[in-house]
Length: 611
Image (cartoon, rainbow, N blue to C red; front, side, top):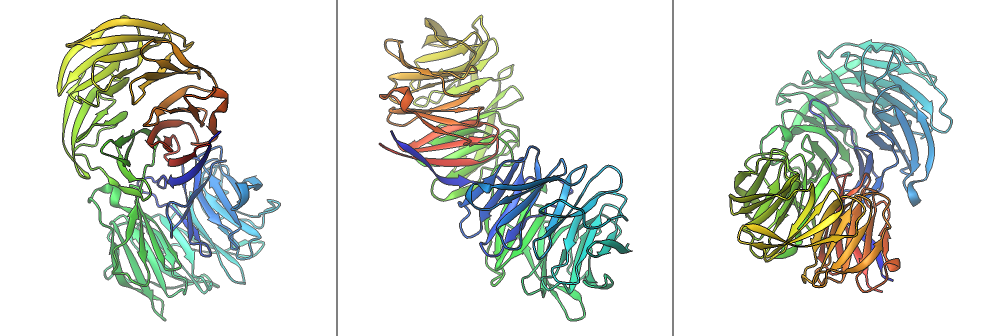
C-alpha cells in the first residue's frame, strides 16, 4: 500500500474587512507570524512561507491569535467571545477554553510572565475588556470606562504592570494593577482609536487612530508625552502600529496605502524615516490594514490580503510579497503545457497562479471582476462560468488576461466541460439539459427531459456523459451540434455530482451526493471499480492521475481518498481533514503529486510514495 504525505501548503490570506485594522502577531524566536481566516488560525514561517501550520478547532470564525512570551502556547479568540489556549507543538493540545466576552474579541495580549491574558472587543452591557489568569480563568480586575467596542489592548511588558485600552468611543483608558483598576482616561483622538502598543522596555506606549494621528504616552503614568509628526505623515486612517525590537522606531500602516517607519526621538517626537510603498494595482484592496515588526522583518497586510515583507536593515530593498485566497477555493486546474503551473479560483472572482515548489506566483488580473463559479484552462485561454448566466472565454498572455468574451447562455450554468483537444467546443449543463458552445456562439440548447446535475465532454469532442438528479448516467455521441443517446447506466443511488474521463480515454469515473464513487470501463460500459463508499458526505470533485492508474475523490467530509485502479478498494489511502469545511478542487500534476483545495481557502500538495 502506498503512503501519502503533505509536502507543500499554500496558505490562505488573513480575513480582512474594509474600514477595520487587523492585528497580526509573531514569535521572535521562530520568526513565525500568526493570523486568522474564517475558523483557521494560521502560523507561517517568514523565512519559508511554504512552512505553514494551521489550527482549526474554533467553532466560530477566529479573530486574533497571539504567541505566549515563551512561544510555547497560542491564545486565539473568535467572534463568540471565546479564547482557546493551545500548545504550538505536537498536535496543538488544547490547554484551556474560556468564554471571555459576550461578543467578538478584537485584540488580546499576554502578560510578560505568561500568567495573565487581557482581551477586548464587543460585548453586551459594559464589559468590553477582561483580564484573567490563563490557567483558571479567574478575573484580575475591573475595567470600566468604555461605552463602545474596544478595538485594542496592551499589557505593559515590565513591572509595575499596567493595561491600556482604546476603541470606538475615541478614548484611551489606563488601568493600574493587578488587580487592575481604572486610573485615567484620555480623549486626545477625534476618531476611532484602532491600535495601542507598548514599547519593548515598557517606558512608553503609542496609540494610532482613524483621525490620522499617532500619540505617545508615558508607560508608567499614562501621561501624554509626544506624538508622531504630521510632516510627511499619513493622509488616511492609521490602522495598526508596531515597535522595533530596540524601541527606537515604530512601523505604521494606513488606508492611504502606505506603511511608514518613524524614528522616535529622545523628546518623544516621531519623524518619518521612510515611507514604504507596496507595489500594486492602485485599487481599494491596496489599503494597508495590518503590520508587525518582528526581528529584521517588517510585515504589512493589505485589504486584499497581500502580505509584504520588508527588511528593517535595508529599507530600500524591494519587499517579498505573496498572497492567496480569502474565500473557498472552488476550482483548481493546471496548464497542460506546464503541469507545475496551477490556476485556482474562488467565487469572489480571484484567480491565482501558483508554481509547484515555489508557491504564490501572482494574481491574474482580469478586465472585469465578475464572480466565478468554476474555471477550466485550455492552452492559451481560460474558460469560466459565473452566477450571471454567462460563460467567459479569457485569452491568456503570460500572467495577464486579455479581453474576455462573455456568452450569455440564458440560465444558470451548473457545470461545464471543455473538449481539450478541440477547445472550441464547450458543453455547459443547465437544469433542463445542456448548451453547446463553439467558440463564442451558442450552437444548440438541448432539453434532455431530466434534471441535469453534472456533465463532461470527451477531449476530442465526440462523446458526452451527462448525470442526472435521479442518479442515472446518460452517454451521448456528439454529431454536429446535436446529442444522440447511446446508453443509460444505473448504479448510483443519489444525484450525480461529478464525472471525469481518464486521460487515456479507456475509463470514466462518477461521484454522487450519496457519497459513492464508481469507475466504469468506457468500451464495455461495465463497472470496473465498485463499493467506493468510504466518504461520509457528498463527493464534490475527483481527479485522475496522468497515467490513468489512480483516482482521487474529494468530499464535503473534509477527506481526500486515493484509489489504485488495479488494486482492491480496501487498499485505498485516506487523507483525513485535508481541508476544513470540505474539499472542492483536486488535480494531479504528475503520477505522484496531487493538489487539493477547499472551503478553508488553502491549497495543499500531497506526495504519493508508491508501495
